[in-house]
Image (tube, rainbow over all chains, first blue to last red; front, side):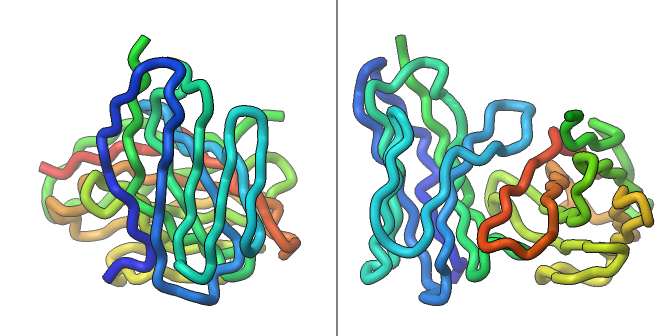
Length: 111
Length: 115
């Protein structure tokens, strides 16, 4: 069993829709939870991170962590075609040195 | 500030050959991590170097090795290439100071195709 599981998609939504991306994990020691966005032919870039449980909002993006269920989510409001990319979740025990990634969900936002 | 650079960007090799990939981190960053990205497995951690020492290692065979130089530049070597080694190899740098949360900055990757 992989430490981090993520539905690969693809997920196709119309412009303006609310998008929900999710990951589950098995290691209860994870404390740092990250979401990366990866455009085609580019390396991943960090969107946002959360420490421990709770919610974090940044513009149109909201990250949620439910440690009791070992489940994290990323919500994108008012999705735009420019949001079309692969979204990867990542987790770490310490926040540095070693990160565990999901396989990524490919999102397509249609104009 | 210049970002993380990786060379070469694309590489084609045949089975049994060896390959060396290079990564230059962001200026001032001392930690370099390497990842393998494939459609089936996603991003998998290979190893991390800090101050010329391997600090962490993933679950890859000994054919995968790396090193870091005094200027923090890093190289990754794969010997006796197998078809399954075809992947995008990503390098990420961070300050390496051991702060509570370190942002990793990724390079564009080297796409390796093994024939």
